[in-house]
Length: 126
Length: 207
Image (cartoon, rainbow over all chains, first blue to last red; front, side):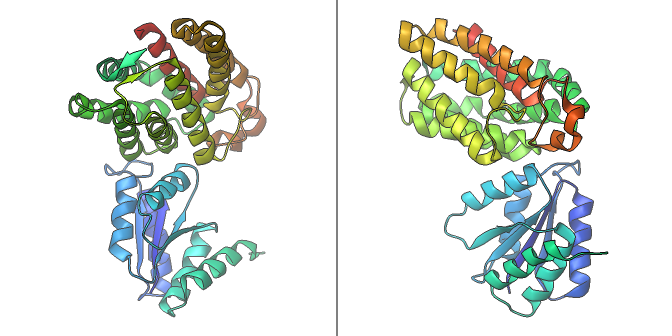
């Protein structure tokens, strides 16, 4: 199964998104990497590295992130692991995570999961 | 222009300056951002300071790369990956040298600017650190090519960076958190451009 890392400035937000995604697909390897080590707002390079390590397999890992430094820090983590199959996904954090978790738990490929998560951007709520 | 020892001294001075201006940078960021620039920069350079003693036998490229790595990890905000990438690219551009001259500095600064553009997917005129760094680089390059005098060049660079910081007051932020404010960001100087300008000033006064 493809691992899913949720990166947010907020520890609680990342955990909440992971929790919500897990509710729909409890087997999916979803892990949160939110906030800084002391619990304050920000994105931590080390936390993201640890999160990627914890869900990494040959199937790969996707990273979903909120904004700004979360995107840049995730990018640097990926650059620091050139031999690994890791990709960032440009999608709404909550919807994308739910869609990705369901797809991952159905053993879909990384490419298919990324596409499904990206498509969640165009789904209207109203 | 400088050797490894002098470079370590300059980095120490940059850190001291950043710690001194922590509240000022945070105040600027409070107005148009998320209010963490000073705190983040101070935290990043504290981490850099811890590593300074390991740097003494290293070449200039390795020192700059290590500064970059130290900045990425603890900072938490956008300035970590941006300045981290800038220092890492600068280090890679200089390589395993123990002395650097004005041309090396310009090469490193150019690589740093390209790194910031790549990481932030940004360019000049978006109310970012680039609005201080790019005019500074251009002014320094011109001056150095004309006079081959680095001290004169860095003075021109600082002048241009200060003008760049002033210029950021006049434009709308289109990158970073400040972009959500739209026109409300006009009238306020960019914290990132300000911290970039501070670093150049420290280099100027250290030479």
